[in-house]
Length: 272
Image 1 (cartoon, rainbow, N blue to C red):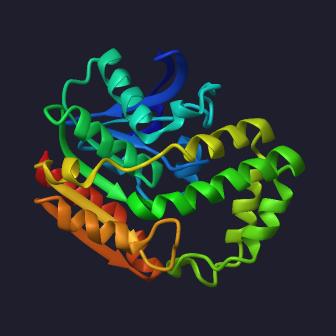
Image 2 (cartoon, one colour; image 1 turned 180 degrees about the horizontal axis):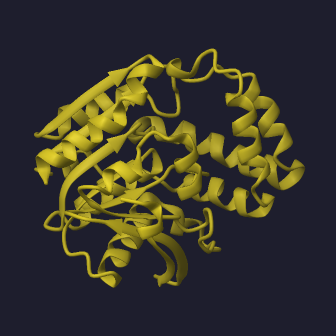
């Protein structure tokens, strides 16, 4: 299906105007991106080939509040993953999507989990890419995001870019010469105040309780990579143990990551 056939627009959801794209043929899939990313950012990253997915599914993608072309919110709790799940469900309501496969990467993965907990009768299956830190390990990540917000407010994004350049990338991306520059360009595109808002909002985020996750019965695909402290394999492994119908795949090389798109398409065909 051509990108020319995808409808783009915006809709006011729970007090914020959110940008979205919607198109394809088949069962509904609703997809969320990661923190500081957007529809455009994920398109550039290319982890999932959306034109191919839309050949057999109707796909709703959107910019989460505070990201991309969507409006920000002054209340940091509006960026909690549970609140972002409420946004997702309200958007599905507004567009007439009754049941769907919920999926996403990082923040979008956590949003999908919360949507399934909040409305298990509506979420038919889950696709969870690079699950983020959660539960006991989340406090340390929240402290880091608070520090990042303060740095951005005081000094802009350049100190973050310099610090990020000293950190090793996740294992599949070791040796990619242009990765650091791509990440730097993405950060420089942000308004500093808006970026600080989403970092501070991320301090309120937490995965659903383990007991809530263990009650989910949806077929689930969990895809993770190694060497990434922000998206630790431990979270993916624990989700695989909690969710009764989960498949977990952990990879360490770029070729395996590039095969994820086909993996997602095959899973969607199975549950569809």
